[in-house]
Length: 554
Image (cartoon, rainbow, N blue to C red; front, side):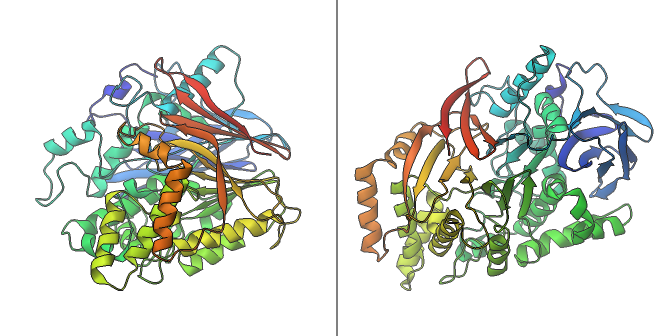
């Protein structure tokens, strides 16, 4: 990539191809490629003998296309080029990176997934945080190709939340916001409208190594809170507080509609695009889909079951079910749940089938350090109290220290535990039991692995695999507390607290199998036949990756 690409101003003219190409789903002989352009245009992808074209759609003056490439040869690596209105725009002029390509899997080959979460934008040269693990991973792939010694290629990049930070914006974004004429009530360091959201993605995905990586490795994504705001949908009290803010309605509308455009649209399989009602409405709106997506962003917040953000992918004999932990919550006191009833029903319907490995993509960990789990469970009980002062205290505590994971939604935690136990026992339409069950998560700004200890009838090993952050940090003064969360005396203390508010023991016990790691990292999951192995690779000061944990799951 050109050396100065990452230092360009957010306001600078970048030519007709503003962002992308981003390779999203590869399904059979088809693939989807997403781009953002500077003007309305026809976008063509030439992946001879395959190809495809699409007309852009417009949202608030920004232009996007999702191109379905058809006719890909099987078990092949097919380089591609992008044209806008007939002019070639990708590869970039003077680009020295390896050609972007679409890879179709050989049948029966091992499945390799890269996963992680929490990436504040910036290139490798920025020193606010340790080096960016995704940048370092891209650099490794580039170096291996240039050396004609390519490493094992990933089948998919699974990004588990906080791909952009709307509320804790990077310094570059804050400076840009300071120069912009904005609504008078806008938070000074936070984005509010759709146009401001576009700058977050331009800053993050415009990083040269990240841009190349996204152009050539398929990716799927799910949001967490920072795509919208910290503590998003913690409780009904929280929602009432936010709805009282004059700028909130525009923020949630822009946050959800921009997420659909930049992230979720590419999660949809090529074969399922025609069934997506929002995509159909966008295409029917001719050139300008602003009103369609504004209305969608509002309805998706007001009616949590109006649109499904969760999705399922089968890669050979591996099933990945990615679950929305944020927008689909039920928040009424006395009925709190991580998923609305209709969403939970959909989730349970995804699990029956014939596969070797089951992966649950959940931005929030199911299994936390035990002491923290008991504390979260206790604060939920306090927040549910009929005594108003107790309920307010519990809610303030939950929001102050982010106590809002599965442990803080007891009904959902217990239901997920029971569901995974049944699948691991070969019940409910899954027989024989999977060789492994893993919950992939992020959010908590440290990486670890834990194995669930379930009933004797559960034969599948069940693990929590957490990898976070990709590029961020946990303050050093908090790290001892997170380590202490795995300490048995600490767990006994917070368990006593949970017992004092009437909580029974959780229906599962779990043991740490990889120590907490607090640096920037990516997870590498390798599934070969009925064997499964995970590695956590962290960044070194020289901006390369090194293994910090390795665990056989089967």
